[in-house]
Image 1 (cartoon, rainbow, N blue to C red):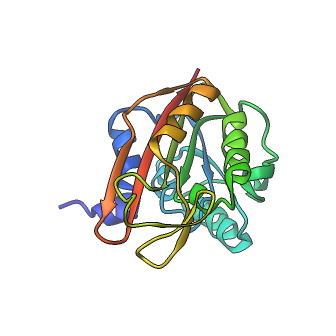
Image 2: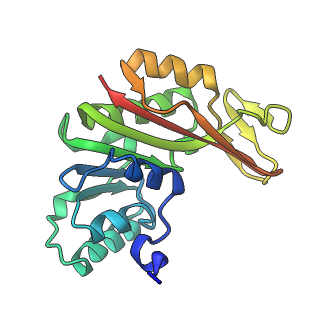
Image 3: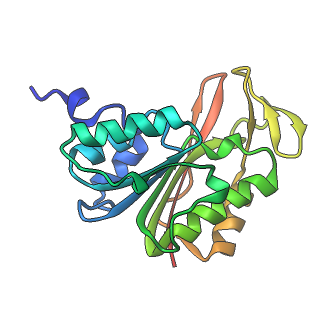
Length: 202
């Protein structure tokens, strides 16, 4: 039996769904925004996909650079950058796919959230795939407590910036994006709700 853990690592199941649908190809230039430990970059690097990353953690970025080397690549350091998502130094339209998994809900407020999204959209080429997974209030409205604006206290004890359906739909329209899948929300019992937001840039 195949060792699926060794092959796919800890890839997000909803990103795996995009792979199954053929929306991420081996020839794509992929940007993992807020890469963290590289749970989603791992499989792509193992497959020889051109992956670039950005994170505010120098340690996380160094680990991903090392992983790329272990996968047989000779990565240009310019693909592995320590920088905030609000001030990316990548060129406009640089990527075919932008992945932002469990990052956007760390926004301080609306301005911070939209600044990150605008930067991610800027580096995505027209026709490219945008994949984000983030905490939301969808289905948890009675279980979260507002702190200020869209910052809420969650049952799991964390504080997060929470989006809702109307906000994401309005932002999709403003950006000129096209939803490839309906918004999908997973409610983790008595803890949080996580929404998957997948768009094509028009």
